[in-house]
Image (cartoon, rainbow, N blue to C red; front, side, top):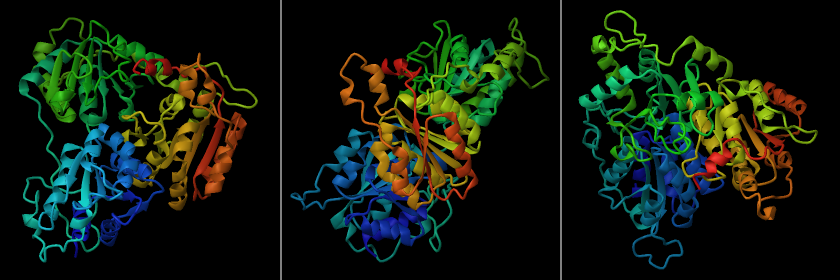
Length: 586
C-alpha cells in the first residue's frame, strides 16, 4: 500500500464522502482508493462544478463531502467553489494533488497553500508516510468540528511512498477515545471506522442567558431571525418563541426552517414580503440566532427599528457585532442558548409576570407572553405572509412570461417535497420567494461569494445528497451558460431534476443597474436553451405563456429518468424588487 491509498482508506473509515471531482494523474490513485473502500465517486465535467457539488452535498446531508483535483490548474479551476464553501463555513474536504518538493520547474507548480488561504479555506498537507493517517484525520477533524473547508494537499512524491507496514489500531487513532465520539454515514463494506467526535455545543455564559431572558421578558414585539448557525435549533427556537410571543424569520440560507409555523414571516431581508418587512421593522427586540444580521438580512439596517434592542447569538466571538452594533452578544450554540433562556424565563416567571400589559398566562413552571402573537397578526400572516399571496400586475405578453406568474404556477405544479437550488442574478428573488420548501433541507443557496454560475452544480450536489426529493435548479441564462457542462453530469446520473432557466438573454442585474451605459456588453442573442438541454440528453421545454407550462405535468407523470430543462422566456421586470437594495452593497 502506498500513501495515496492509505489516505483514501482512512477517509473511507472516517465516513467522508461522497467524492466529486475530475481525475488526473495527480489524484487518480487516492480517488481509486476511496472507490475501492466503498466511497461513491461522481465524475464531474469541471473542477468548479466538483467543488460546488461537494459544498451543496455537505450542506444537505450533514456529512463531510469531498472534492478532488489535479495539482496546480486542477485546484485553481476549483477555487471559486472552494471560496464559496469557505465563506459559508461548509464542512468539506478538498483532496488536491500537489507537485513534489523537488519539482520546482513543473508547469503545474503554484503556491497551493497561499491560493487556498486567499479564499478563506484551511490548507493542510500530508507530510510523510509516518504521519499520513494523523495528517488525514487532522484535516477531517478540522472540517467536521470547526465547520471549515479544508484543502488537504497531497504531494506527488509523498503519495508514492510506501505506507507503514502496520496500521495503528483503531483505539490509537486521533479522536477514538473522546467522549461522545461518533461518525457520520454508514461504514463502507469491509472497512472498520475511524472515529472523530463532532464538536460539543457551546453552552452560553449564565450571566448572558440571564440578560437575554430579561430582554425577552420585557419585549412586546419580539422577532427571532435564524441563520445558518441555527439550522439544527428549530425545536428550541420554536419553544422559546411560543413562550415569549416572538415571530419567526430566517436569513435566506436557512429558508424553510419554520415552513409549517403559523407565526413564521419567511425570509428576512431583500426577499422579505411587504408584511415581513413591516413587522420586523416594527419589532422592539430582534434576536439573531446563528445569523450575521448583515446588510442582506437586515436591508442595510433598515429592517431594525432605531429604538429596538438587538441581540446576536453565535458560536464565533468575532461574529458578534461584526456587521452592526448589538446590545447583547451571546457566545453560544443557538439551540443550547434558546433552551437555557427558556429555562431562565420559567425560573423567574414571577418577576416577568409583573410587566404591565404583557399578557402572561399559564400554569406554574411555564412562561407565556402574548408578545407579537395577536389574532390580528395571525390573520395578516395567513392572508399575506407569502409572496404568492401578494397581488402583482402581470407583465406577460404573447412571447414572454412574467417571472412572478411563472414561478407562482411552478409552485403549484411541482411536488411540495422538493429541494430548490438557486443561482445568482436579477431573477434569483423569484424562486427564493415564490417556491415553497418543506424544511431547511429544501433550500440550497450558494451565495456567500455572490458568484454567478454555481447554481446547476449546486443542484446536482444537493440531488446526490437528497435523492428522495425533486430537485429544482433555478438559474438565469447567464449562469446556465457558465455552468452548462454539468448538464452532462446530471444526465449521466439520471437525476430527476427540473432546471428552470429565467431567460432574458442578458446579465439581467447589470442591464437594470447600468441602464445609462452601452448595454451591448451585457445583452446577448437569444439562445434556444431547451434545444441545448435536449442536446445533452435532457427533456426540453420552451415556455412563453402559462399554457406552455402544462407540459411540465407530462414530465412529472413520466419516469423522470432524465432532467427537464425549461427555457422560460421572461418578460422585462424593470429590475426585480430586491435589486436596487442589493446594489447598495456594491
